[in-house]
Amino acid sequence: MLAKIFRKFKGFGRLGYDIAIDLGTKNTLVFVNNKGLIINEPSVVAINNKTTEILEIGHDAKKMLGKTPAHIQVIKPLVDGVISDFEITEKMLKHFINKVHGDNFSFMPRPRVIIGIPLDITEVEKKAVEDAAKSAGARKVYLVEEVMASALGAGLPVDSPRANMVVDIGGGTTDISVISLSGVVSWKSLRFAGNELDNNIIDYIRDNFNVLIGEQLAERIKVNLASVIPFNEEREMEIRGKDLTTGLPTAIVISDSQVREAIKKTIIKIVENIKLTLEETPPELVADIYEHGLYLSGGGALLYGLDTLVAKATKIPVMIVDDPLTAMVRGAGSLFAKEDLLKKVSSIF
Image 1 (tube, rainbow, N blue to C red):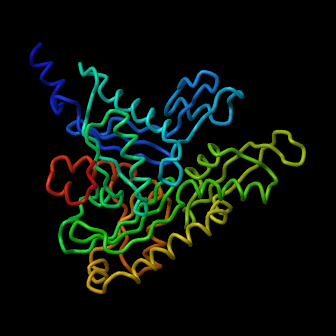
Image 2: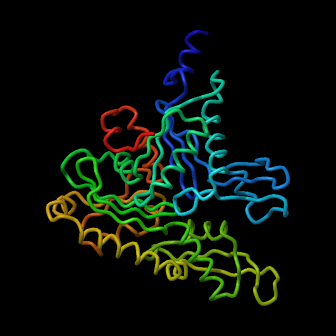
Image 3: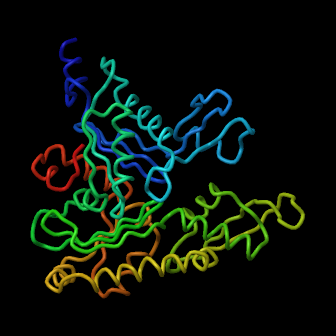
């Protein structure tokens, strides 16, 4: 019995687990020190407007998008990588922190928490993240730039004088950075990423087929058909939406070539900003990047052919990090075992 209890509490401090959080526009991921990735759920909350009661959080709340009666509101509390609804974000974080500690005897967990932040976040936005985390139960909050955490998740030597170029394409932001000596030397942060691709698809289908679809269907189309170069075989998908002429349900078939056309402008903007970041990077660091390559992380890294397109445009090798969706939160979580590096790369509250 004692051995079982010891195993249960391994990695658990007096005040709770050490937790790393990827507080994303689309999804929130939670990594627990010594336990690994525990939570990967949509950053979505359903609330009853009459009672202000939280009804659902995460997967169950996402299922309610676009399907609720007037008194139920489904909220995405993060927009473009930053908090847009403080109170809802706080409740969502508290829910996830309590969920992590649900298998132990901690009455009120007070964990140390590392949270990833976009590169161009303002001091006011930083304070909002800190306050939300502390209100949700964190006793100490470390804010780490997402690209730095992604580089650590990819196993790159961020504290060496060697340049490491990381492009993190998430749901709301695309962060492009050159890292050296535990700091970001040159960078660009774009307030568009995976969500923008979804919007591109919605707009294309509306403009070309006169059919309106929802964002969940647009995301499924992106996952199944989106690419920046042709697949080995053409892909098609039957989709259903609302005919804007009649107002009635209708079905159409869309192909991967049409989806490529839909997202082309956004992809071009991302590639052009990668090239601009390279142009602004000191020549010694560019030489390192040419030798060691550029790393793609985040959900956008899984877009078929993106690595090939970026390599062709920049004339440098491009690699997709292992498990790009979780690279940031895994890298952040690894910092608990590297206290000196954690102090160098984080803002501590």
